[in-house]
Image 1: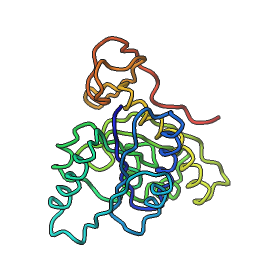
Image 2: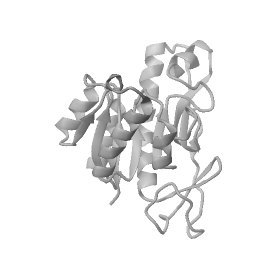
Image 3: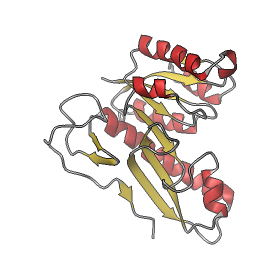
Image 4: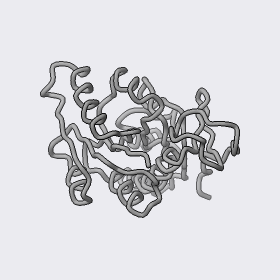
Length: 229
C-alpha cells in the first residue's frame, strides 16, 4: 500500500475529507503524515485527533526556501512517503521538491482551471460575474495552478448567490472530488501524457499512480462533470 502525506496551512477541511475517505477505505493508501508550515493550523489538531503523525516546520526559521524544502524532504523520506497531497497549503514548492516527487504531487483548486488562478479564486469568480463555478483536482508542476487536470466539477451560479454561499458550495465540491482524485492516483488508474490525464478502468501494472501506464485497460472515463441543471 502506498503511503502519502498531506500538506496544509490552515483549517484543514479538505484534510478532514481526506481523513474520512482514508478511514472508510475509499482511498486505498495510508495517510502517514500531515505537514504544516503553520503551528497554529487547525489541520494539525485534526490529524492528531485521527491518530496521524504530524510535522510542523516554519519557513521563518530558514534562510532560504531550498534549505526549508530539503529539511521537509528528509522527513518525507524517513516516513517513506510515496506521494504528496496539497490541501490548502499556501506555499509554492521549489523545483528541488518537484524533482523529488515528479508527477506525484496533487492539488485541489477552487475554480475551473485555467480560469482564476491564485488565492482569491472564489472571490474572483464571484466578482467577475461568472455564470458557472467549480473545482479542479490536478497534478502539480512548476507553475502555479497549472498542472495536468485529473478531475473537474462545475455548477451554475444562481442569481441569489452570495460570496459566502458560493464558498460553501465550492468547498462541498472540493470535499467530494478531491478524495476521488487521490483514490484514482493511489490505485494506479491515472495515465498522464502531456496535459492529458486518462482515467483507466483498471489499475496500472505498477504502483506509481500518475506515471504512464500500459495500454491494458486504457479506457478513459469522463474527468469533467457538466454543470447542474
